[in-house]
Image (cartoon, rainbow, N blue to C red):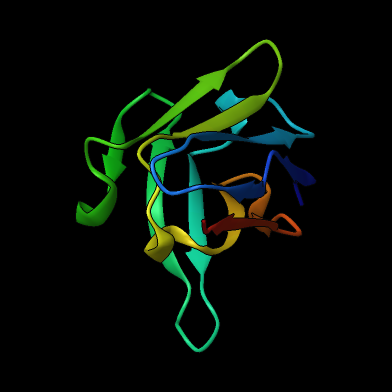
Length: 116
């Protein structure tokens, strides 16, 4: 398995920004897809954004134009830049890796709270 460590969550006012980081224990080239998911209380975990080892990205509709997923291959880290945050973005955010070599791994999660 790949070890994933998230950081960067916190409390932010509506309209504010946060950047989440997910540091992986393996090379990003050995991971087929890295994704950010979120889960609010009472809701199912949902995909927010994903990036492939080829650099292709996709986003759920509710975050398009506000969130950006990116990566630093040398640092083995994937980022989620979140701008124009809304209260409905409040959730625990999880990093997930999918690898032919290592299987599926999840991070421990980081809390994002958007509130005035």
